[in-house]
Image (cartoon, rainbow, N blue to C red; front, side):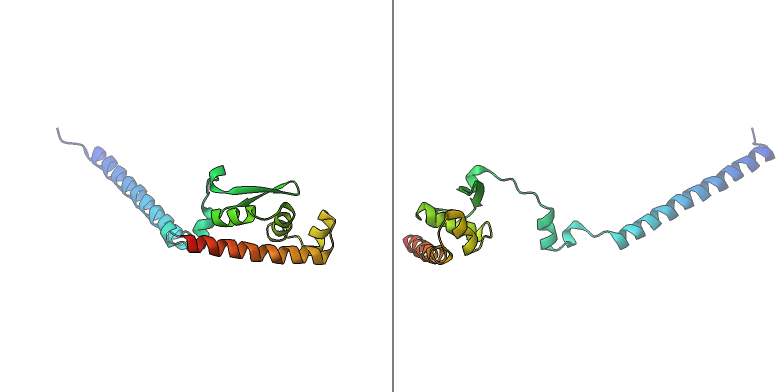
Length: 142
């Protein structure tokens, strides 16, 4: 059986509508690709600094050494440095950690420990020298 002229007309109209829909979908897809190309950047093209900000690092207690300073936990990641800090006296350790990790000045750390600023400064300076010697010893041993 041959289709009638009416059926052929309907088929042609359907065909035409279908082609328009497909062309619209293709046009929208290409438009979206262009928008993404202009607005988005590939992960592999990101600078390393940005990638590190996006990264999440798991922290385990075995990865660092914790010191309690003024009720605040100070974490030292470097094992050699942590070992050198452990050899300092409690007062010297606190002064050093307050200065470098908590951002306290010599005056602030002196007030906290009830010593004057110059004593705090000398203690910090001597502690740094002791740490430097200890780290050199560890380097020579290896």
